[in-house]
Every structure is written in structure tokens, then in C-alpha cells.
Image (cartoon, rainbow, N blue to C red; front, top):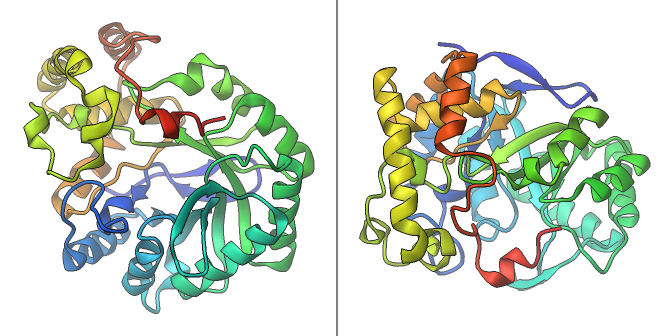
Amino acid sequence: MKLNQVKLGNQGLIIPNIGLGCMGMTGFEDANMYGEADENEAIATIHRSLELGGNFLDTADLYGPFKNEQLIAKAMGSNRDQYIIATKFGWEIDDSDKVTWAINGTKDYVKKAVERSLKNLKTDYIDLYYMHRLDKNTPIEETVGAMSDLVKEGKIGYIGLSEVSSETVRRANAVHPITAVQSEYSLFERTAEEKGVLATLRELEVGFVAYSPLGRGFLSGQIRSIDDLPEHDFRRGIPRFQEEYFHKNIELVNAVESMAAEKNITSSQLALAWIISKGIIPIPGTKRRKYLEQNIEAAGIQLSEDDLLKLESIVPLGTDTGAPYDEFSMGLLD
């Protein structure tokens, strides 16, 4: 199947209705976020995605740091114009390529970060450039003003924000039209909906991109115990995977799997089709062609109103599945 092309926001960006999250394709500093990665298979996955119409790739300077952008550059080769690249800045990376774990949204840092990403991606433009997290010490007007300058210079095409509140979106959009907001969103994580962010985005005609659309892997059905996670997998340290939530979450997954089985699809495909039915762009992360193909097939699944009601009755809005980050990282959300 070929993916449908849809508008992301109201500024003219056209993308497929499902993207590819690339974070897991490289390690992170001295660890792997989601287990070991295989560069050759990762590149083959990116190429297969393009063949199926999945040319919307999501990365960030933080991933590696820089290794992920460099991998994407290698995969694109001379075919840069066939891909739509989204990358992010904000987690401060010093001149020795170390992450400081501060958030930096100052004008000077925006300009520094974009030049690094352009170099690592081996390109002269970035299609969609996100502020990865809000710098609470810098007015959003300064950050977006600097990003607006990059649009005028032709270095980026469109401006995005990640994990922000309705108020931040409104203030940012008053400086320069925002094309997309990216936040975690899945059957297991609907904070953006609960806090009214989705309603604000619809009002302002800003697109919404959902990362971790499979509940950080839970909704894939591949995780049955904490021992199914690799030793250095960061999920071992977050509340959603701790004992007090784990068994309850497995029960929810079992119910989703039962519904998926009735439709002869996987639980992942059902969870992704649910997101797409809402006009949201999921960017499931995978580093293997097998799962990529399954994910892309989800974009062709039609769910009825009854299907949607049944699925949302399994995991109703407000269900507490455990925080998706540790306490430090939760404190950095807007």
C-alpha cells in the first residue's frame, strides 16, 4: 500500500499520514535507549520506508548526540530531496559534544544548534525544526523569533514545538505560525488531550505529531515482563514499567490484543489506526523492516465509530498507566 499524503498544519507542509521515529536506530551516549541497534538494518528500514511512501523521518541532535542525524544523512545519500526531515534542538550540547542536561532556547543557541544539525544531516535545509523542550528561563518569543529568522534564511522550512502547553503554543504562534507540536500520545498517554492542547491546536490549525504512539512499546504486545527489556533500556527506570503499574498495564494490553485479534490485525496496528483516525500523525519508532511494514499497514485500517468507542472504553481518557518519564524529565515538560 502507498501512504496517504496529508497537510501538517496550515503552512503548506505535506507529509505521509504516518512517520518514522529514528531515535532507536542509534545508541545514546554510552547506552542504547531501546536495546542494541544495527546500522545496516536501520538504513535498510529507512530505505524501505521511502519505498512505501514513508519519507517523513524524525530525529534530534540529542540522539547520539549527533549519531542519529549522521545515520540519516548516510541513509539519504544523494536522495535528500525525497525525504522530509524533522529534527530538534534544545537540550544543550557543549563544544565537546557532551549533553549538559540544561535546556537552552536562547537566540544564540538556536543559531548554533541549527548549523550543527545542517552539518550532521549533510544538507542545507531542515524541513521541520522543533524546539525539543521549553527553556523556562528564556521567553518563548525569543526562541521562536530566532527560529523565524532561520525560516527567512531558508535554513528551515517550518517551525515546531515539543511537549508544550496551550499558552506556550499561543504565544509562539503570535511570533511566527507554528506548523506542528510533537508530544507523547497514545492509548496509554493522553495528557495533551486532557489539558486541552489538542483543542488549541485544532483552533489554531497547528498539526499534532505523536511520539511513542505504542505506549513506549507496551501496546506492541512484545513486553510481558520487565525482563523482556534489555539490561540498559531506559524504560526500566520509569514509573510506567514499575511493578505497581506493570501488571495493570498488561491487563489493558491483553484487552486491546483481544480486540485486534477479532479484526485480524496486531495490537500495534489497532493502536496506530486509532491515532490516525483522530487526524494525528504517529511516528512509531522502529529499527527493523518487519515492524516498519506492519506499522505502515496500519495507515490503511479503517475503524468505525463503534470500534473507536470500544477501544476507548478499554482505556478511557484519564486512565493512569504510570508516568512516562522519571521525576527529573517530567519536571521539564511545560
